[in-house]
Length: 157
Ligand SMILES: Cc1cc2nc3c(=O)[nH]c(=O)nc-3n(C[C@H](O)[C@H](O)[C@H](O)COP(=O)(O)O)c2cc1C
Image 1 (cartoon, rainbow, N blue to C red):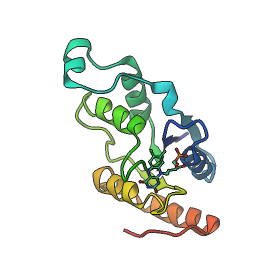
Image 2: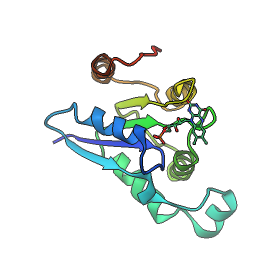
Image 3: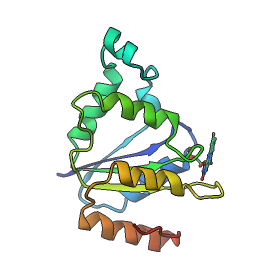
C-alpha cells in the first residue's frame, strides 16, 4: 500500500496547519497515512559548528528516513513573519545536510493557512519555489478539490 506522510510545518500544539494537513490526507482512501508532529523531532538549532562537532542529530535522521520511505508528502506551512516557522526551517536545514537531496521529486501537496492578514501567501510561494519542482497531476487535481470543498481562496501558480 502507498504511504503518505503529512504534517503541519509548525510547532504549535494547536496548529491549524497540522489540522489542515490531516484533513488533506484524509481525502485519500486506500493509502497508509502517517501524521508527523514537529515537536517529536526537536533538535538543536542548526549550525555548521554543531554539525562538525556532533554530526547529524538522531531526530533529523529519523525524520529524513520517514520522508524518504514515503510515496507522497503533504505539508501545510504556517507563516511566521513572511517565512517558514523556525521549527520547520531548523528540521529542513538539518535534513538538507544528510544527502544534499531532500524531496526526491516525490509527489507533494503544499498547503498553508493562516489567520494573518496576508493569509500565508509568502510562505507558500517560497515553499513552492524552493521545494516543489514537479507536482504530479494527481496532486494538482486533489489540491483543487480540497480548496473547492473548503471554499478557500486558491492561489494558482
Ligand atoms: C511570530 C508570528 C509571526 C506571524 N507572521 C505571520 C505572517 O507573516 N503572515 C501570516 O499570514 N500570518 C502570520 N502569523 C499568524 C500565523 O500564521 C497564525 O498564528 C497561524 O495560526 C500559524 O499557523 P499554525 O496554527 O499552524 O501554527 C504569525 C504568527 C506568529 C506567532
